Image (cartoon, rainbow, N blue to C red; front, side):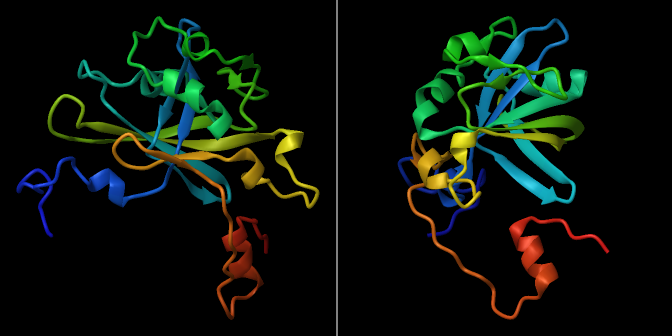
Length: 220
């Protein structure tokens, strides 16, 4: 089959686009408003951009009222945000924090999770989350769209600090993803969790190339 998004009909019961780009990591983003109200929301369009220094991004479509998401406004106005790893154990809290509510609502309370003080930034971390990134706001790329929610803000932040819980590491010192079971977004109303891992090392790679694949900075 072939269709042109927004131009020709796909003829399927549901739009397949988001089911074709999978799995997508969850950007569980916590921010703080200028008035001190904590905000927590999950974004399925999240990714790391580079590692030396590390940058991440999350993309937030406008809300159902046609306004920019609170996460975007707070990050821009305060210059800070935190990424919290969303795991299978925390899936219900992640889902509750996705509700469309006003900026006066503290989603930490709505989700039933605990605030943990950050070290370098003001927004709190999710204490129950095994890994968090403290980030400084870098830039926003705004992409125009159709309809009420089509327009999207791509928010880029630099990772200033990384928190990893002791129980998240295996005896080998590696992050134990099979134990943590991070969740990821699929299409429709579907999610998945990491339950298997396999390795592939590109043949013929030198130390510099392998360091880049590992995400390990190298200095001249």
